[in-house]
Amino acid sequence: MKHRKVALLLFSILNCLTIATPSFASEFNFAVTPKASENQIDKNKTYFDLSLAPNQEDTLTVDLRNDTDKEVVVEAQISSAKTNGNGVVEYSENKLKKDKSLKYDLKDYVEAPKEIKLAPNTAAEYKVKIHMPNEKFDGVIAGGITFKEKTTEKTSDSSDDQKGKGLAIKNEYSYVVALLMRQTTQNGDPDLKLLGVKADQRNARNVIQGKLQNPNFTYLNQLAAKTVITKKGNGKALYTNEQTGMQMAPNTNFDLSVPLNGDRLKAGKYTMKIEAYGQKDQAGTHSFKEKDSEKAENYRYQWSLEKDFEIKSDVAKKLNASDVTIKKDYTWVYILIGILLLLLIIVLLVWRKKKNDKKE
Image (cartoon, rainbow, N blue to C red):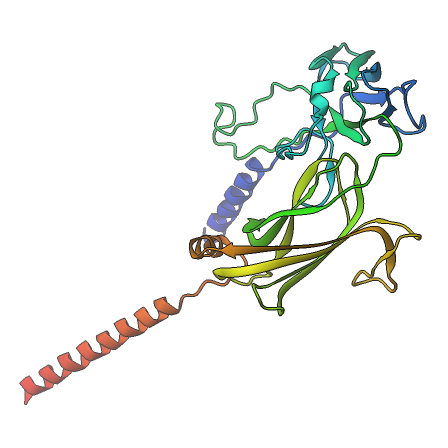
């Protein structure tokens, strides 16, 4: 009887785990193929990289194909390129904020349908009308077109059909076609600025972030940065970090993070120093050796950036409390338990003495 109860308990646990198993989408229901424009700089590229004169217009074509037996509705979103917190350029729609230096937002120079219906086993052309600004500039207007299947499936676990069934996870797949518009292939030089520094968190871990900005109309490629954080007025390094192989889109910014590796943030005034290098070039005059590399590389660009910042005590306390890598200090709990035990011992001793006195 006992073994039977154990078996039933195990079956119940396994049944609950099975109900809560997430569900995942497995494949695309449509295909995307960009057609090269007459204004394409390199016809072999699988994305749009166009050379246009000021005020020139063009109509781009993307072939969409539905090989399934059901109708597919494809949504399309136009967005400007941005740089994420890992130093990677994103061409798809996202929640990253625009940089103040962005003068030409791709959205403002593109006209295209927001969605297109594809009948079963058919193909269709998606047309994108673009317009170059009516003024000369050296640089690139960068962005992308994101194609995603429109779905009406409910994914909220609060809906009637999801109640009691656990959390359902649905992956959304999309095609992203980069769209670059330029007036000349001589696109000028990138720049790098350190706008500000603050304490924050990434993945529930304390970091110190320096906001890097590329305010120019050109890409900053192969960005490498060595960061040192010191107490203000003190040259001794508290934290160092090195990141390489990064890229910044034109007129964008991102937060370069220096991890604290489980250390607690402490209130005070600090300084962030960054030695940054861009665009590897054998003829470059700036040399930088990566920490895991056997020899130094030459770079075309180099920047020395520095910014003072302050960590307030309330900010440090709040971030330290939510950092999952910081070991919590329970000293006060142990002291309280010790005091309570001591009081208990004293009470017991007093009670025992009184009891003995009565016997005598």
